[in-house]
Every structure is written in structure tokens, then in C-alpha cells.
Amino acid sequence: MSASVNSQIRLRLYRSLHTQPRHLFFCFLNPVFSLLFVFFLSPSFLRYPPSPVFPVVSVMVLSAANWHLLSRSAAWGQLLLRNGSVYTPASGFQEEEIREKLLAFPGGSVDLVKQESGIAVLTVNHPARMNAFSGSMMVELEERVSQLEGWMEGKGLIVQGAAGTFCSGSDLTAVRAISNPQDGVRMCMFMQNALTRLLRLPLFSVALVEGRALGGGAELTTACDFRLMAPGSVIQFVHKHMGLVPGWGGATRLVRIVGSQNALRMLGGALKVDPEMGLRIGLADGVLEGSQAGEESGACALLEAKQWLGRYTEGPAPVIRAIKAVVQSGRELPLEVSLRAERDVFGSLWGGPVNLQALVSKAKHK
Ligand SMILES: CC[C@H](C(=O)O)C(=O)SCCNC(=O)CCNC(=O)[C@H](O)C(C)(C)COP(=O)(O)OP(=O)(O)OC[C@H]1O[C@@H](n2cnc3c(N)ncnc32)[C@H](O)[C@@H]1OP(=O)(O)O
Image 1 (cartoon, rainbow, N blue to C red):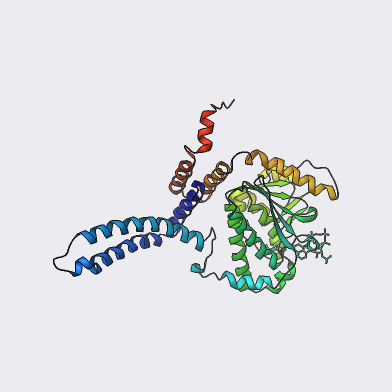
Image 2 (tube, helix red, strand yellow):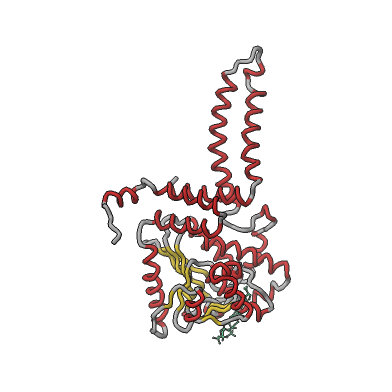
């Protein structure tokens, strides 16, 4: 298993032990049962006089195996059960039920193209409805995030909308059909899971905002590390006008990006944030130059976004992914837990091939 995978697992283990301390209890319970088993059921104990050899050797072997298994199973268990998600079956969330329901509202697609360069492009594709998320697109988004989680060569991700506009939120046809609170909350949990996992990916992500990012579309932009806005584009949390607040995690992330005062202004006033305002309040990280109009503009914007992202994704994947991992733990974890995670990620790189190569080449940072 590669060092970076190991560090990801450890990171998740820290998260799991921090957020769910009961896992610590199971960590201790398992060895205790093993010891009881060895002492009371070993053949030497059933004989008289009992020989110490079998229990002692068994205890040693089992302890080693237990430690190995526990340190992994807690981490792997978390990987499999939570997989970076906020809501799991353990917290009463039945993902399959809402998935079925969402699939009843088809239309559009969410497309993923992974490139050799380690940069992937995720396209929200439903032009007839200004790239609004149909139910099946929500399911596809989650599937694409899973694919990206398994992509160990990935360094960067560009999230864009098809045909020159970003995304106009949920497809209102689906919204109307599931307008009861129970389904609404389940859809919101599903999307919070998908978008949280998107932001936690160990790669640098950027939302390429052309045209409009409205409602859920505005929320999607906050699930990326950066936002690049094209001239004339708008990010608008229209939720207030819909009698709602953001539910896909957009409010929580927005506060962390622009601070609570700006978030209050944006949500309270349903403000149309243009590139100039986006830069001023820290929502946008850059504005595209592209003056190109029509068909060509999309390709140009994507090229520009790739170049922009290149300054962060230049270099070997393990280092780029490690940088995102340490920033991500700093974003989410309490200080001491994050420091330990940083130590582990650091340890996975120190003395590694890239580090040794850099030492040999006597790089100067002038
Ligand atoms: C807020 C909570 C919720 C969440 O977070 O989950 C949401 O996101 S709810 C959705 C919020 N978004 C909207 O309410 C968008 C409503 N639409 C508009 O404001 C306009 O359509 C706009 C500004 C996106 C584009 O205006 P424009 O004049 O340029 O084009 P059209 O209005 O003619 O739109 C073309 C075509 O797209 C359909 N459309 C646009 N957005 C949606 C949407 N979210 N759901 C379903 N359909 C949408 C629009 O109805 C037009 O279709 P047509 O068949 O030609 O009437």
C-alpha cells in the first residue's frame, strides 16, 4: 500500500476516533476477548498441570494480529462505512432509498473526463434546463466523486457547467415532486455527503463559473477549493427567494470562505455576486480574461482554468495530494488532531523519492 494511501487511512482514523470516541472502546474490547479465549480454551490450560507455552505464544501472536487488524479495521471500517461522508446508515441515513427516489427524475448527466496530466474535468450537463440538477444527476455526481476518490494519480479537478453556464441549482421539476419535508431532508443529506466528499478529495479543485451559479449551483461552487469567475458571471444564493436556506452544506462552507458577515449579506440579500465583488469578498480566487464570445468561449475558459490551476498542480502527485491533505485536516480537525495528521503526511514524504531527489539536486529557492 502506498504511503499516501496509508496517510489517508490514518487521517480518517484520527477523524473517526475524534468524532466517534466509542470506536476506542471497541479497539480495547477486541484484544480482551482474544486473551480470554486463549487462556480458557487453549489445550494446555485444559490439561493439568497447565503449560505456559501455548497461551504465552498465542497471546503474543494475537496481540500483534489484533493491533495490526485494529489499526486497519477502524480506518478501513471508516473508509467503507463513512467514506468521507457526513451521514451513514449508522446515523439512520438510508442512502439507497433516496437514491431510488432521485433516479425517478432523470435528465442530463454529470460527465467526468480524467486526463493523463492528473487533471480531471467534471461537467454538469443539462443545457436545456441551464444545467439544473435532475435527480439522476445528483446520483451521478455521487458516482463521479467515488471515481475520483479511487483515482490515485489525480492532482486537480475543474468543475464546470455545459454550454457556457454553470448550474441553476436543483431541477425545479424534481423539487416540486419531492416537496415534502421528509424527502427534502433526505435529498439534502445525500447532496451534503456528495459535496463534502468532493471538497475532501486529495486534489486541488476549482469551480469554473461561467454564466450563472444559482441556488444549489452556488452551493456547488463552495464545494471546490477555488472559484474562477468568467466576465459577466454571477454566483447567487437565491434560496431566500425560494423560502429556503441552503441545504447542500453551502451555508456552512460559505461562512468559512467569506466569513459570517459576508455570508449574512449574501444569503440575507440573495446578492448577485459578480466577479468584481467575488474578488473583493474572497469568494472568487481569480477572474478569467476570456473576452471570446459564442461557441469558442467555453473551450477558451477551460484552457484558461487549466493554466490557472497548473501553478498549484505542477509537480508529483504524492506531494500535491499531501498538500491538499494537510490543508484539509487544518480546515476540519481540531488543532492537536490536525497536527498529528500533518506529522503522518509529512512522514509519508520525508526521505521518499521526491524528497531525496530534491536533496540531491541542491535546489535553490531564489
Ligand atoms: C434553492 C434551493 C434549491 C437547492 O438548493 O436545491 C435550488 O437550487 S432550487 C432552484 C433554484 N434555481 C432557480 O430557481 C432557477 C430558476 N430559473 C431562472 O431563474 C432562469 O431560468 C435562469 C436565470 C436560470 C435563466 O434565465 P434565462 O432567461 O437565461 O433562460 P430561461 O429562463 O429561458 O431558461 C431556459 C430553460 O431552463 C429552464 N430552467 C432554468 N433553471 C431551471 C431549474 N432550476 N429547474 C428547471 N428548469 C430550469 C427554464 O425553465 C427554461 O426552460 P423552458 O422549458 O424553456 O421554459
